[in-house]
Image (cartoon, rainbow over all chains, first blue to last red; front, side, top):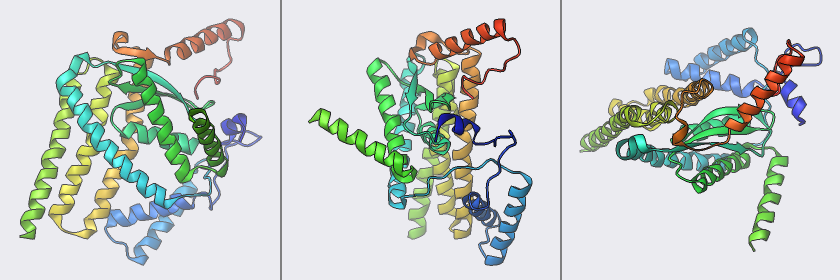
Length: 201
Length: 135
Protein backbone atom coordinates (compact mmCIF):
# COMPACT_ATOMS: atom_id res chain seq x y z
CA UNK A 1 0.00 0.00 0.00
CA UNK A 2 1.48 3.34 -1.02
CA UNK A 3 1.84 6.17 1.45
CA UNK A 4 -0.57 8.50 -0.33
CA UNK A 5 -3.11 5.75 -0.54
CA UNK A 6 -2.73 5.19 3.16
CA UNK A 7 -3.36 8.87 3.88
CA UNK A 8 -6.39 8.91 1.63
CA UNK A 9 -7.83 5.52 2.47
CA UNK A 10 -10.56 7.11 4.54
CA UNK A 11 -11.72 9.13 1.51
CA UNK A 12 -12.47 8.16 -2.08
CA UNK A 13 -11.59 10.13 -5.25
CA UNK A 14 -14.40 12.65 -4.76
CA UNK A 15 -13.21 13.29 -1.24
CA UNK A 16 -16.27 11.78 0.39
CA UNK A 17 -15.52 9.55 3.36
CA UNK A 18 -15.50 5.82 2.65
CA UNK A 19 -17.59 3.43 4.66
CA UNK A 20 -16.61 0.03 5.88
CA UNK A 21 -18.43 -2.93 4.38
CA UNK A 22 -20.36 -5.34 6.58
CA UNK A 23 -17.59 -7.94 6.23
CA UNK A 24 -14.93 -5.45 7.42
CA UNK A 25 -17.11 -4.56 10.38
CA UNK A 26 -17.72 -8.15 11.45
CA UNK A 27 -15.03 -8.22 14.22
CA UNK A 28 -16.42 -4.95 15.57
CA UNK A 29 -20.00 -6.30 15.55
CA UNK A 30 -18.99 -9.49 17.36
CA UNK A 31 -17.05 -7.42 19.91
CA UNK A 32 -20.03 -5.13 20.54
CA UNK A 33 -22.31 -8.14 20.89
CA UNK A 34 -20.01 -9.62 23.56
CA UNK A 35 -19.89 -6.27 25.39
CA UNK A 36 -23.71 -6.26 25.41
CA UNK A 37 -23.73 -9.78 26.85
CA UNK A 38 -21.13 -8.88 29.47
CA UNK A 39 -23.04 -5.77 30.57
CA UNK A 40 -26.28 -7.73 30.98
CA UNK A 41 -24.32 -10.63 32.56
CA UNK A 42 -26.42 -12.83 30.31
CA UNK A 43 -25.04 -14.76 27.34
CA UNK A 44 -28.32 -16.41 26.38
CA UNK A 45 -28.84 -16.57 22.56
CA UNK A 46 -31.87 -14.26 22.63
CA UNK A 47 -29.98 -11.54 24.47
CA UNK A 48 -26.97 -11.88 22.14
CA UNK A 49 -29.17 -11.59 19.03
CA UNK A 50 -30.75 -8.44 20.43
CA UNK A 51 -27.25 -7.08 21.14
CA UNK A 52 -26.25 -7.86 17.56
CA UNK A 53 -29.28 -5.95 16.25
CA UNK A 54 -28.38 -2.92 18.36
CA UNK A 55 -24.75 -3.15 17.16
CA UNK A 56 -25.94 -3.22 13.54
CA UNK A 57 -28.07 -0.15 14.16
CA UNK A 58 -25.14 1.65 15.83
CA UNK A 59 -22.65 0.97 13.01
CA UNK A 60 -25.27 2.15 10.50
CA UNK A 61 -25.95 5.40 12.38
CA UNK A 62 -22.35 6.20 13.38
CA UNK A 63 -20.39 5.17 10.29
CA UNK A 64 -16.64 4.64 10.56
CA UNK A 65 -13.90 4.46 7.93
CA UNK A 66 -12.80 0.89 7.23
CA UNK A 67 -10.13 -0.79 9.36
CA UNK A 68 -7.91 -2.80 7.03
CA UNK A 69 -7.16 -6.22 8.46
CA UNK A 70 -4.33 -8.39 7.21
CA UNK A 71 -6.44 -11.53 6.92
CA UNK A 72 -4.29 -13.69 9.17
CA UNK A 73 -4.22 -14.19 12.93
CA UNK A 74 -1.97 -16.60 14.83
CA UNK A 75 -3.87 -17.50 18.00
CA UNK A 76 -1.00 -19.45 19.64
CA UNK A 77 1.41 -16.55 19.30
CA UNK A 78 -1.34 -14.22 20.56
CA UNK A 79 -1.69 -16.25 23.77
CA UNK A 80 2.09 -16.24 24.23
CA UNK A 81 2.09 -12.50 23.60
CA UNK A 82 -0.54 -11.88 26.29
CA UNK A 83 1.60 -13.85 28.76
CA UNK A 84 4.74 -11.84 27.93
CA UNK A 85 2.71 -8.63 28.05
CA UNK A 86 1.32 -9.34 31.53
CA UNK A 87 4.79 -10.23 32.82
CA UNK A 88 6.19 -7.00 31.32
CA UNK A 89 3.42 -4.99 32.99
CA UNK A 90 4.16 -6.55 36.41
CA UNK A 91 7.95 -6.11 36.10
CA UNK A 92 7.74 -2.54 34.81
CA UNK A 93 5.11 -1.50 37.40
CA UNK A 94 7.50 -2.39 40.20
CA UNK A 95 10.32 -0.64 38.33
CA UNK A 96 8.32 2.61 38.14
CA UNK A 97 7.40 2.18 41.81
CA UNK A 98 11.09 1.82 42.71
CA UNK A 99 11.97 4.90 40.64
CA UNK A 100 9.19 6.96 42.23
CA UNK A 101 10.30 6.11 45.76
CA UNK A 102 14.10 6.04 45.50
CA UNK A 103 15.09 8.21 42.51
CA UNK A 104 12.24 10.72 42.41
CA UNK A 105 13.37 14.12 41.14
CA UNK A 106 16.70 12.76 39.86
CA UNK A 107 14.98 10.51 37.30
CA UNK A 108 16.12 11.30 33.77
CA UNK A 109 14.22 10.37 30.62
CA UNK A 110 14.39 10.78 26.84
CA UNK A 111 12.22 11.34 23.79
CA UNK A 112 13.14 8.60 21.31
CA UNK A 113 12.05 8.30 17.67
CA UNK A 114 11.32 4.77 16.46
CA UNK A 115 10.57 4.11 12.80
CA UNK A 116 8.37 1.03 12.53
CA UNK A 117 8.55 -1.48 9.69
CA UNK A 118 4.80 -1.73 9.19
CA UNK A 119 2.61 0.72 7.28
CA UNK A 120 -0.66 -0.54 8.70
CA UNK A 121 -2.55 1.93 10.89
CA UNK A 122 -3.96 -0.91 12.95
CA UNK A 123 -0.51 -2.32 13.76
CA UNK A 124 0.91 1.11 14.58
CA UNK A 125 -2.03 1.64 16.95
CA UNK A 126 -1.49 -1.76 18.55
CA UNK A 127 2.24 -1.17 19.04
CA UNK A 128 1.46 2.22 20.55
CA UNK A 129 -1.09 0.78 22.95
CA UNK A 130 1.09 -2.11 24.06
CA UNK A 131 4.18 -0.01 24.70
CA UNK A 132 2.14 2.63 26.54
CA UNK A 133 0.49 0.01 28.75
CA UNK A 134 3.86 -1.40 29.76
CA UNK A 135 5.02 1.21 32.27
CA UNK A 136 8.12 3.19 31.36
CA UNK A 137 7.16 4.64 28.00
CA UNK A 138 4.30 6.41 26.25
CA UNK A 139 3.77 8.07 22.90
CA UNK A 140 4.22 11.81 22.62
CA UNK A 141 3.78 12.11 18.87
CA UNK A 142 3.02 9.94 15.85
CA UNK A 143 4.07 10.57 12.26
CA UNK A 144 1.64 8.47 10.27
CA UNK A 145 3.36 9.14 6.92
CA UNK A 146 6.54 7.31 7.93
CA UNK A 147 5.05 5.17 10.73
CA UNK A 148 7.37 6.87 13.21
CA UNK A 149 6.53 6.87 16.89
CA UNK A 150 8.06 9.47 19.20
CA UNK A 151 7.99 8.09 22.69
CA UNK A 152 8.87 9.39 26.09
CA UNK A 153 10.91 6.80 27.97
CA UNK A 154 11.42 6.96 31.72
CA UNK A 155 14.78 6.15 33.35
CA UNK A 156 17.09 6.72 30.39
CA UNK A 157 20.56 7.61 31.64
CA UNK A 158 22.63 7.26 28.49
CA UNK A 159 22.32 6.85 24.73
CA UNK A 160 22.73 3.07 25.20
CA UNK A 161 19.54 3.08 27.28
CA UNK A 162 17.76 4.94 24.49
CA UNK A 163 18.94 2.33 21.98
CA UNK A 164 17.66 -0.40 24.30
CA UNK A 165 14.24 1.27 24.42
CA UNK A 166 14.21 1.49 20.61
CA UNK A 167 15.07 -2.21 20.29
CA UNK A 168 12.31 -3.09 22.77
CA UNK A 169 9.70 -1.27 20.67
CA UNK A 170 10.87 -3.00 17.48
CA UNK A 171 10.66 -6.32 19.35
CA UNK A 172 7.02 -5.60 20.28
CA UNK A 173 6.33 -4.75 16.64
CA UNK A 174 8.00 -7.98 15.50
CA UNK A 175 5.82 -10.05 17.84
CA UNK A 176 2.68 -8.26 16.65
CA UNK A 177 3.60 -8.78 12.98
CA UNK A 178 4.00 -12.49 13.72
CA UNK A 179 0.51 -12.49 15.24
CA UNK A 180 -1.46 -10.35 12.80
CA UNK A 181 0.82 -8.79 10.18
CA UNK A 182 0.38 -9.30 6.44
CA UNK A 183 2.30 -12.00 4.56
CA UNK A 184 4.52 -9.29 3.01
CA UNK A 185 5.47 -7.97 6.44
CA UNK A 186 6.26 -11.49 7.62
CA UNK A 187 8.49 -12.08 4.58
CA UNK A 188 10.27 -8.75 5.15
CA UNK A 189 10.83 -9.76 8.77
CA UNK A 190 12.31 -13.11 7.71
CA UNK A 191 14.79 -11.50 5.28
CA UNK A 192 15.76 -8.95 7.92
CA UNK A 193 16.42 -11.74 10.44
CA UNK A 194 18.52 -13.77 7.98
CA UNK A 195 20.64 -10.75 7.02
CA UNK A 196 21.24 -9.94 10.70
CA UNK A 197 22.29 -13.51 11.49
CA UNK A 198 24.66 -13.47 8.48
CA UNK A 199 26.28 -10.28 9.74
CA UNK A 200 26.68 -11.78 13.19
CA UNK A 201 27.95 -15.12 11.88
CA UNK B 1 -10.48 -24.40 54.10
CA UNK B 2 -10.76 -23.32 50.45
CA UNK B 3 -12.63 -20.17 51.47
CA UNK B 4 -9.70 -19.15 53.68
CA UNK B 5 -7.16 -19.75 50.91
CA UNK B 6 -9.20 -17.72 48.41
CA UNK B 7 -9.66 -14.95 50.99
CA UNK B 8 -5.92 -14.78 51.59
CA UNK B 9 -5.13 -14.62 47.86
CA UNK B 10 -7.81 -11.94 47.31
CA UNK B 11 -6.48 -9.95 50.26
CA UNK B 12 -2.93 -10.11 48.90
CA UNK B 13 -4.12 -8.92 45.49
CA UNK B 14 -6.01 -6.02 47.08
CA UNK B 15 -2.99 -4.90 49.10
CA UNK B 16 -0.71 -5.13 46.05
CA UNK B 17 -3.27 -3.23 43.94
CA UNK B 18 -3.48 -0.48 46.55
CA UNK B 19 0.33 -0.34 46.67
CA UNK B 20 0.30 0.35 42.93
CA UNK B 21 -2.05 3.31 43.47
CA UNK B 22 0.21 4.52 46.30
CA UNK B 23 3.21 4.26 43.96
CA UNK B 24 1.31 6.35 41.42
CA UNK B 25 0.67 9.01 44.05
CA UNK B 26 4.32 9.05 45.14
CA UNK B 27 5.38 9.26 41.50
CA UNK B 28 3.09 12.23 40.89
CA UNK B 29 4.77 14.03 43.77
CA UNK B 30 8.38 13.08 43.13
CA UNK B 31 8.99 12.90 39.38
CA UNK B 32 10.57 16.08 38.01
CA UNK B 33 8.28 17.29 35.22
CA UNK B 34 4.91 16.77 33.53
CA UNK B 35 6.15 14.26 30.98
CA UNK B 36 7.67 11.93 33.58
CA UNK B 37 4.79 12.45 36.01
CA UNK B 38 2.46 11.15 33.32
CA UNK B 39 4.14 7.76 33.65
CA UNK B 40 3.06 7.59 37.28
CA UNK B 41 -0.38 9.03 36.55
CA UNK B 42 -1.36 6.58 33.83
CA UNK B 43 0.52 3.32 34.26
CA UNK B 44 0.46 1.72 37.71
CA UNK B 45 -3.33 1.34 37.59
CA UNK B 46 -3.01 -1.06 34.67
CA UNK B 47 -1.60 -3.60 37.12
CA UNK B 48 -3.34 -2.09 40.16
CA UNK B 49 -6.79 -2.33 38.60
CA UNK B 50 -6.08 -5.85 37.33
CA UNK B 51 -5.15 -6.96 40.86
CA UNK B 52 -8.18 -5.28 42.45
CA UNK B 53 -10.58 -6.72 39.86
CA UNK B 54 -9.05 -10.19 40.29
CA UNK B 55 -9.55 -9.88 44.03
CA UNK B 56 -13.17 -8.88 43.39
CA UNK B 57 -13.70 -11.88 41.10
CA UNK B 58 -12.24 -14.21 43.73
CA UNK B 59 -14.32 -12.76 46.56
CA UNK B 60 -17.66 -12.66 44.70
CA UNK B 61 -17.25 -16.34 43.68
CA UNK B 62 -19.62 -15.96 40.76
CA UNK B 63 -18.74 -16.61 37.13
CA UNK B 64 -21.33 -14.18 35.78
CA UNK B 65 -19.41 -11.10 36.99
CA UNK B 66 -16.14 -12.19 35.33
CA UNK B 67 -17.05 -10.85 31.84
CA UNK B 68 -17.97 -7.46 33.34
CA UNK B 69 -14.67 -7.29 35.23
CA UNK B 70 -12.72 -8.25 32.09
CA UNK B 71 -14.66 -5.59 30.19
CA UNK B 72 -13.80 -2.98 32.84
CA UNK B 73 -10.11 -3.84 32.57
CA UNK B 74 -10.14 -3.87 28.75
CA UNK B 75 -11.78 -0.44 28.66
CA UNK B 76 -9.04 0.81 30.96
CA UNK B 77 -6.44 -0.72 28.61
CA UNK B 78 -8.03 1.07 25.66
CA UNK B 79 -8.37 4.49 27.25
CA UNK B 80 -5.24 4.89 29.42
CA UNK B 81 -2.75 5.09 26.49
CA UNK B 82 -4.93 7.62 24.67
CA UNK B 83 -5.18 9.94 27.65
CA UNK B 84 -1.41 9.59 28.24
CA UNK B 85 -0.76 10.43 24.60
CA UNK B 86 -3.12 13.42 24.50
CA UNK B 87 -1.79 14.99 27.71
CA UNK B 88 1.83 14.17 26.77
CA UNK B 89 1.43 15.65 23.32
CA UNK B 90 -0.22 18.80 24.61
CA UNK B 91 2.41 19.09 27.34
CA UNK B 92 5.25 18.72 24.87
CA UNK B 93 3.75 21.26 22.47
CA UNK B 94 3.19 23.81 25.22
CA UNK B 95 6.72 23.16 26.55
CA UNK B 96 5.66 21.90 29.97
CA UNK B 97 8.87 19.95 30.32
CA UNK B 98 12.29 20.30 31.87
CA UNK B 99 14.85 19.99 29.10
CA UNK B 100 17.64 19.14 31.53
CA UNK B 101 15.92 15.88 32.54
CA UNK B 102 15.92 14.64 28.93
CA UNK B 103 18.98 12.67 27.83
CA UNK B 104 18.03 12.94 24.15
CA UNK B 105 15.09 14.57 22.40
CA UNK B 106 14.69 13.28 18.87
CA UNK B 107 11.36 15.08 18.40
CA UNK B 108 12.77 18.59 18.95
CA UNK B 109 14.49 18.71 15.53
CA UNK B 110 11.34 17.51 13.76
CA UNK B 111 9.12 20.07 15.47
CA UNK B 112 11.63 22.86 14.75
CA UNK B 113 11.79 21.87 11.06
CA UNK B 114 7.98 21.80 10.82
CA UNK B 115 7.76 25.19 12.50
CA UNK B 116 10.25 26.67 10.04
CA UNK B 117 8.39 25.17 7.10
CA UNK B 118 5.15 26.64 8.42
CA UNK B 119 6.71 30.09 8.78
CA UNK B 120 8.04 29.84 5.23
CA UNK B 121 4.64 28.77 3.89
CA UNK B 122 2.90 31.57 5.76
CA UNK B 123 5.10 34.11 3.98
CA UNK B 124 4.54 32.73 0.47
CA UNK B 125 1.09 31.13 0.62
CA UNK B 126 -0.76 32.36 3.67
CA UNK B 127 -3.86 30.17 3.35
CA UNK B 128 -2.39 26.67 2.86
CA UNK B 129 -3.18 24.28 5.63
CA UNK B 130 -0.23 22.28 6.77
CA UNK B 131 -0.84 18.57 6.34
CA UNK B 132 2.68 17.33 5.64
CA UNK B 133 3.80 17.08 9.24
CA UNK B 134 2.06 14.66 11.55
CA UNK B 135 -1.60 14.12 10.83
